[in-house]
Amino acid sequence: MGIRTRRKNKQEAETSSRRTQVTAQDLMDAAVRLLGTHRSVSTLSLREIAREAGIAPNSFYRHFRDVDELTVALIDQAGRALRGIIREARQRLSMERSAIRTSVEAFMDQLDADEKYLQVLLREMSTGSDAFRQAVERELTYFEDELRDELERMEKLTGHATFEPALTAKAITRLVVAMGASAASQSVDQRAELIDQTVIMIRMIMVGSQAMAKKA
Image 1 (cartoon, helix red, strand yellow):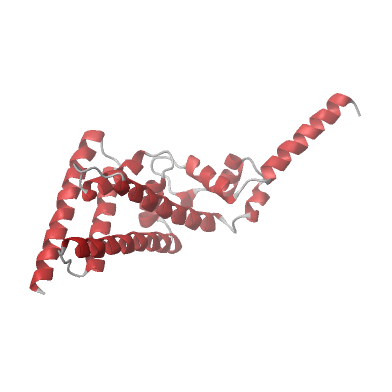
Image 2 (tube, helix red, strand yellow; image 1 turned 60 degrees about the horizontal axis):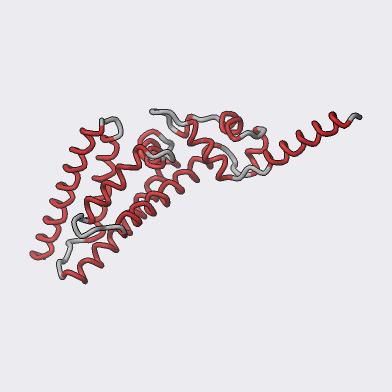
């Protein structure tokens, strides 16, 4: 065996070794890269994802049983990522900007993000299987729980009570998600108007909830 042949075999072995070291995250990233404007993760094939990640299809099973399990993992990750983005946005609040507008803008900005996390949540919520929709529902519940905690914290700080904080948080969360789905196909100018409308509607929910709390 010549030196050139041995070197080629060594390079091929190193390449194969690198490919077998692909992580679950690499596979999820590969799936997201394959998503088009209207494509759901659930329509991707195992072979497509494996090819995009640069591994043999059989190597896929080292991390996930099937594409369904990968999709649920991706939905869970999408929810965690979005919650983190919104938390960071709230922490960067200036005196001139409201927490409501900052949160809504942070959410809508994710429609154009490279990671496509928001698209994953919106699509699987309406087009995915029962398992996918349950995963999305779980992530929305996490959003609602965090918002409920924020409403209760603000009540202690301001003295303004919210009627049924958990239900108020659910109304706001579901509104923002629905408006996000509408904004996905809109232009930048149209989306700006939709954000303004969403902020007003959230304030209407808050004013109504606080008014109900005073009467309770």
